[in-house]
Length: 187
Image 1 (tube, helix red, strand yellow):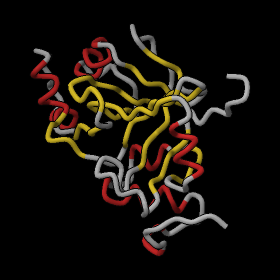
Image 2 (cartoon, one colour; image 1 turned 135 degrees about the vertical axis):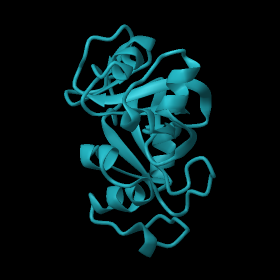
Image 3 (cartoon, rainbow, N blue to C red; image 1 turned 90 degrees about the horizontal axis):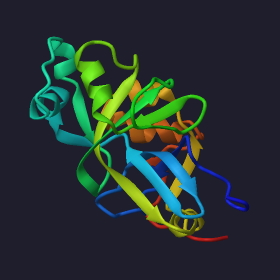
């Protein structure tokens, strides 16, 4: 990763000109970024499932009605049958990837078993699927002003209502995206 500055741990905030329905008004958390490309999870797209649905499909019982009702996000258009748990802290799960000092993403069943038993990470969101960018693709999209970037904010990931996350994330960099035009240019 010699000449590539990593965006891992950053939000990608879709600019109004980004009209791809998968990403329009989207906020993605970049989980991995390097010379080979990038992987991220959208944090403001609701799937049709609750965590209780996912746990039941995995034949896991959940006694906590609040946890069972937790919405599952649509993390992106790639491998939508695959689950990802974005969480703070490290934890000791079979398949975790440390994004940075504050964030991890886990894909192994054991984290869901722990969550169902009330022993999972204190702050987590579950997403199905992910967003992926080939080598150089994200950098090209950034040059074309498709995305704003800023440090990820746990309040937005865990507390802000889904429908407010796009505007709230943009506000972190002092932008009201609803006031921007739907086209991009270069000065």
